[in-house]
Image (cartoon, rainbow, N blue to C red; front, side):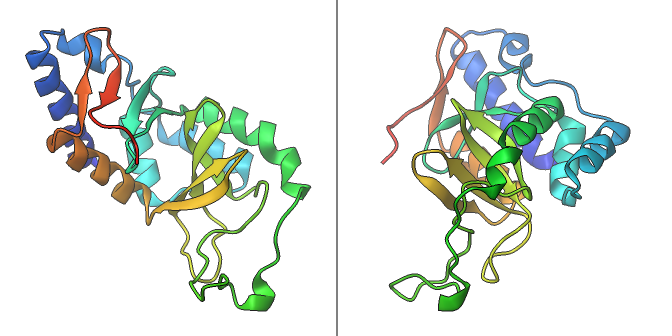
Amino acid sequence: MQEIWERIETQLRIEAWFEKMPVSEVLSDFQPGATEEEIQAVEAALGIAFPEDVKASYHIHNGSNRQALIGDPDQNLWELCSLTEVVSYWEMLEKYAAGWKVDLAHAGWFDGNGQPILVRVECWNVKWVPLLNSNGTLICLDLAPTPHGHIGQIITNDPENGTQWVAPSWQAFLSTFADDLEAGEYRLSLIHISEPTRQAE
């Protein structure tokens, strides 16, 4: 995980040099890492255990100061939640866990086309942990996958479009972002906002 974050930060430094922006300005929104005690306190509050890759990531950076600096495979940009924000969003959504859900167990967790369903179709689940935020849409750590998914996969939770699978793990998600940075899929503007070089398809 350290190597992945170093790749992200190195590419941002390169982009900053080309745009003649101070490196400190580009990277200052990534907050210092959390302590083990802070991580354990969140695990206790949510009744969960973080996978090792998520814990390692929070030891490196505990949020992005509410700046959208992390990209996803669809070229959207997200705020990295601090641990305080993780708990705040989770507590705000906990009441919706008793809301609607689609029981697909009777179909063997396959959709109408015979494809395996990886993510539960629910309004909210207390085993979903927000990691990234964009105007109320969340990218979450999924600790309650269907039998076809696996613990630690990354999903979106969108109030309008429901849930979707995004990546097999947090490490894989950040690695894809690092790859996209190195491939020039994103650029830095002179007003200190990271932007995709192309629109999401």
